[in-house]
Amino acid sequence: MSKPLRLRQAAGLGLLFALAAPAWAQLPPRLTAGGVADQLDAARQRLAGQPDAAAMTEQLQALAQNLRGALGKQLAQPLTALDDRARGQVLRAHAAAQLAADFADNAGGCREGELAAMAQALALSVRQLAQAPAEGKPMQATIDRVESADHTAVFALRMADKPVALALVGSELHDPQCPDPQLTATDANGTPLSVQPRITGVLPTRIEFEWPATVSLVPGSYVLHARPQHKAFLVGCSAQPEATVAVQVVPAPTFTVSYALEAVCGRAASRTVALGKGTLPPLGGYGATVAQAIDTSACGDPVAYRIWATVAYADGASATAGPFEQSADANATVGLPGGLSLSWDPAVRQLFVRSGAPMCKGVR
Image (cartoon, rainbow, N blue to C red; front, top):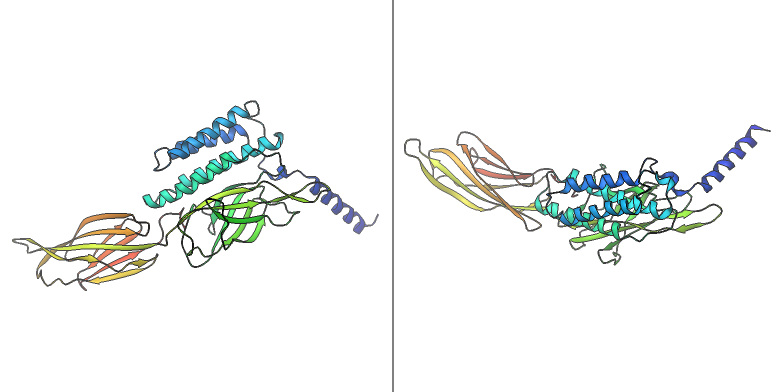
């Protein structure tokens, strides 16, 4: 037999085995119902005490209890040993645990308003996973996270006039033998958006896409729906149950800083002199700077300066910082909530406010 013929026969056999391979051949081999129940318990404990997390922790506990109740004799069995319905239940519970763990990992550095938006997205995602009907289909797609270009989990998107590159990460999201999965975005009530995401790449565990400009969306909850297809042996591709995940759209970042500045004058008989108070022009986004000139002629012999500041955010929240006191011989720079910094430069008699890089990783 010639070598080319043997290669063609081998390729044909490989294709045949690939066509016959079950969908769960793509799944993590060590994932078990008992292990996922433990993951849910661990995620619930990490969320304990987080603002707006009470409903989520109850839902995670219910998912763990349902797993242990429904699969009590199969808790240690791998996914490959479970039927389609049980495998889907385990995978959906695993997705809920992963989403909750990502929330806990990304909660640091977030303001209360940002955490609330992230919590709304997580709660909706977990609720949909818990309420998804049991399906006897071979391909049980689930979404474990929405991911940014730097592979960080995302729960909320800031309104922007430019598209953003994102990815859905999970299991059973694509059968390479079939066309790309269908990806649609809806509001929380299931109404499709007028402009839809565009898929840029697919793998069984990943759907990369471009979310169009979100500047026209109303702040609130939105849902991404991924519906893959599966090809059975000697049968064409057919639609499988959809996987969903929620994201929250929040206002574009703007910061408005109000200030009050006073001087401590005179070393022998010190007195306090108010130099000025007001509101600086808004900062539009991150990496911006605004300045305000201050008339200091009311204090000819300053010893120190005191500064108060209040920051107002686009979501309606605000935070107050200060007073901060600094010697009159040096510049004063202090951090403000939300990643801002305020500087007073007595040499040029100007107050500066700068917005740095985003502090909350779960909001993009």
